[in-house]
Structures are given as C-alpha cells and as structure tokens.
Length: 307
Image 1 (cartoon, rainbow, N blue to C red):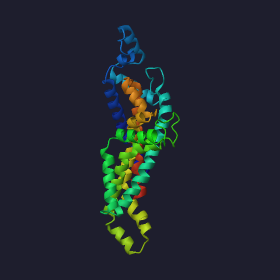
Image 2: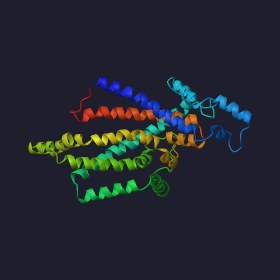
Image 3: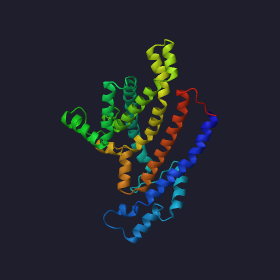
Image 4: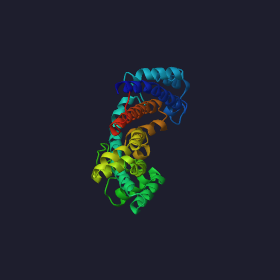
C-alpha cells in the first residue's frame, strides 16, 4: 500500500504541473488584464507599463509561470489587482464553499444511495419507474432554473428560508443551496446505485448468501451494497472537486461569497492572479480526492490489493 501511495503521489506531480500550466496559459490569453484594471478609460502608456512591471506582466509567459509556481510552494498565490493577497480571498471563500460542498455531498450520499437501493431492489415496479422519471426531470432542468424556482417558492412566496444566505453561511442556511448544487449529481448517484444493485442482485455470491439463510438486511448491506458502491464512490470522489468549482451558479443565486463568487469576479475583472490561484487549489482538491477514492476501493472490496 505504501509503495502504491508513493507512486501515485509521484504521478500527481506532472498532472498538477500540466493542469496549472494549461489554466495559466488560458487565463493569460483571455484578454489584457491591465485594460480591465483601468476600466472604461484606457490607461496611458506610462501607467500601463508601470502596472505591468508591478504585477510581473512585462515578462514572458513562461517566466511568469515559473515565478508563480516557485511562489506557490512557499504559500504565496500572488496579489489581486486591488492589492489584496489571494490567500486572504481564499481564507474567506474556501470555508464557505467547503461547508456548501459538505452539505451537497451528504445530501447526495444519503438520498441518492437510499433511492438507488430501493429502486434497485424493486426494479420494474412503480416506485422504480417513478424515481427514474423524477431523476430524468432533475437532470434535464438546468441548475439555475432549479435554484431560482426553489428560491422563489421557499424564500419569497412561502417564507420558509431566507432568499439569500448571510455572510456567515451556516450549515442550516446552506441546506437549500446544497440541495440545488447536488441536484444533478444526486440524480446520477441514484441511477448508478440502482443499476449496480440490480446487476449484482443476480450474482452468484448473493444467491449463495440467500441460500445459506442469511437475513435479508445482512445480505443487502454486507454483500450486495458493499460491492455495488465501487462505481458510486468513483463518481462521488470526482464530484467533490466538480461541486466546489461548479458552484458559481448556485452561489450567485443565493448570494454566497465563496469560491464560485471569487472565480466569477476574477474572470469578470480579468484578475489573472485570483483565477489562477483558486484553480490551482481546486486542482489539488481533484488530485487528493481521486487518490482517496482509489484507496477506498480496497476497503469496499477486500480482493483489491495495491502493491
């Protein structure tokens, strides 16, 4: 196991460098950040040259990237164009988005896996058909439509929740935004679990367990569900980073000042340091989540061994 982890960590290095280099190049060619910094009125050449020198934009892109990566390993993600260090923006944005992601993941796991098990065990029955239709509707409706409808009904019309989230963004306030954020993933988890349960239900090891007279609950939990969760865990593991990075729409709807909000502002204002810094951390989240998923396989299936 230890050798496998070391090998995976070494494999993560070129992936991390390649992903950050790609996003660095994409952000630096999306426009002139100095023009966005000056606003509607163009900067005079002397001011533009001074700003480029101040932020290191007068150097070649490859040199800017090497300087940035060297600073990242010391914990310095650069300075936004308003003079605020990017780490300060992260310290306020990431805790909010992490809480939102936790709420979304919990909803996704609890509701998605429960519905998947119920429908998988009752494949072809009315409850199975009803859940499949409901998940198809959820997948088909865009997230911003779902979010606006829930905000209108629960917040404006019925007054059950606040239409927007407070700056503290407590777990209680994030339940509805978390449901909106997890809605599409919840539908996919339900379908994945249902398909996996229905397929494994006909496996020999399940029939053997039933033939031995084991209680139905033990057969479902210890044998059927445990072996059926591998594709579900794969999806959830990769979905963690996707939820954190894809929360822009949800955070805009509920006025949550998290990672999505900061990325939106950074792209809108062409603030390259903010965008690259936040995406760098999200790349690390993706890599760590995938490593943990691979290690979790051995827990779910004892036949899997890492050398």
